[in-house]
Amino acid sequence: MLRIANLALLILFPIAWFAPLLRAGLLPIFGLSEISIISGLQSLWDTDPALALLVTFFAIFAPYMKTIGLALIHFGQMRRRVLPALEILGKLAMADVFLIALYVVLVKGTGYVTVETGWGLYLFTACVLASIGISHLTRKR
Image (cartoon, rainbow, N blue to C red; front, top):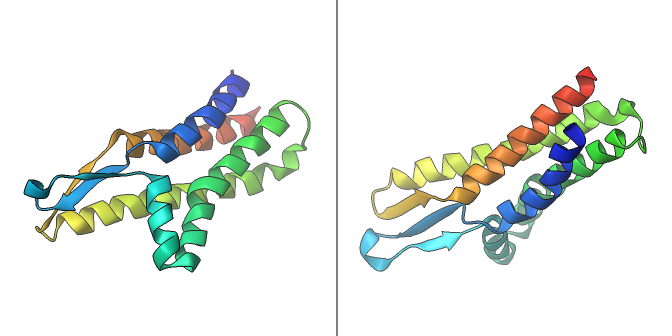
């Protein structure tokens, strides 16, 4: 069952990267633009490449490397000794979820910008939490 759940994350993570994390706009009368992890990263690469590299690692590479690593452990292709390092990767991805939530709270406080959370934020958060849970259950096995 852990194998199937972990392999499902290989499909769900890319969906979460392109799904709308939030909708934002200047006052509600100007309409709202949907922002995904990928569209946010594209904008960030133009303005701050160092931060974009860090966020790319947290949001894309860390969770996917962890998921692939867990799959290799589940199928006997990697030793279980690597599991603590994989768990650290999962926690780094959770830091990305925290930052997104923090930005939403800060922007909502300004009053001039309208921000609504999208279903992609919940999907990405669920994927990260599921990955943490799968690694925890893998350790117990």
